[in-house]
Amino acid sequence: MKKEERRRRLALTVLVSLFVFIIIAVAGFLAGLLVYVMIRLGIIKPVGGPPEAGTMFLLLPITSTLIGVLFTLLTGRISLRPFYQLINQLNRLASGDFHTRIHFSRPISRHFVFREIEKSFNSAAEELEHTEMLRGDFINNFLHEFKTPIVSIAGFAKLLRRGNLSEAQKEEYLAVIEEEALRLSEMATNMLNLTKVENQTILTNVTSYNLSEQIRSTVLLLAEKWTAKDLEPDLDFQEYTIEANEELLKQIWVNLIDNAVKFSEPGNLISFHITEKADDLFVSVSNRGTEIPEESLNRIFNKFYQADESHSSEGNGIGLAIVKKVVELHSGEISVRSENGRTTFTVRLPKQQSEP
Image 1 (cartoon, helix red, strand yellow):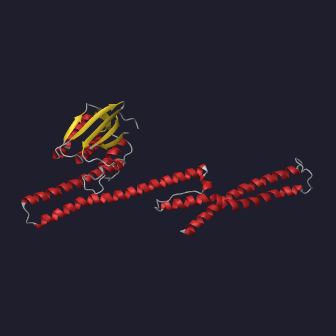
Image 2 (spheres, rainbow, N blue to C red):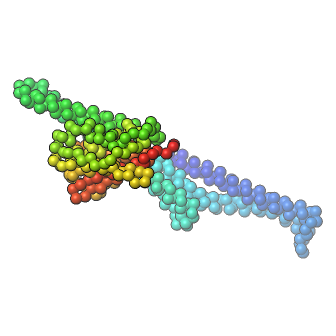
Image 3 (cartoon, rainbow, N blue to C red):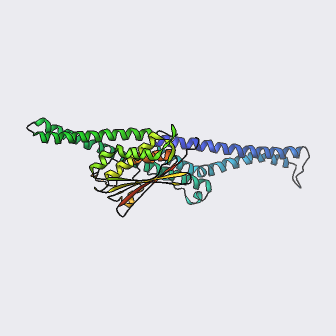
């Protein structure tokens, strides 16, 4: 590998040196030849020069060539040093070393071009390092979230096979198996939805429909979940129409409501508000319960991220990632505020979609 790298460096040095040499040699030769011809034609005469002055001028191309060779040998390696350094760091980056950074020496780094190269390279390396870290976390969390219900199902299935169980125990174990199977199914559905929206770059199937009615119907769709925790929805909004992909937008409300139910304390309200400002609609979903730590607020929309790193709480960190992507597809924004025991997600959506 080192021999190959030295060979590439030598080839680059020779190529650049040859290019510089040719330029200097040709320029010197043409200048000397021009002076020689002009002396021969009598256009110019050396002042006080000997008769052999023309011969001296003829030596000028040769002298220029020799100077070009020396100049190339002396400066070739020096001028190519930052490029060698850049190539070396690029090779390390390509081999998976995302911790690598490039720092040119002080005289070189003062030059605008090399300063920008250094800045751009280091920014790209940092982004790749961050992406690789997220990829590792994604795989670890993915395996954990899928393994937990599978282990639970296998464990209760073994208990059922032993027999000698009362009907109440059988019903209890079957209920757990059914619940964990539904959890796996929901997770798989969310993964498919996330993959679908992540691969989508252009918003399609845009229609005009009643947003208020969509939110009301979604709340009713999840009635079994919020009634199980003795929660009550508070729908405080008028009728609003929006241009959007109805199917995708529904995923926003399903996931936000599901998230609010999971992290609400029993017996509280889940509040829904819609306000209109200029060309935008703002939809907020609020619940009372465990606050989101401040350091987690900017990360909760990452795939599989959970503020509770012990994974003891419900959720798999996929739903909010879907929400963010769908909102962005609609040229909107989503924000979250969590304080004084209340967490509020606010979605801004344009009332009309601009032409792609």
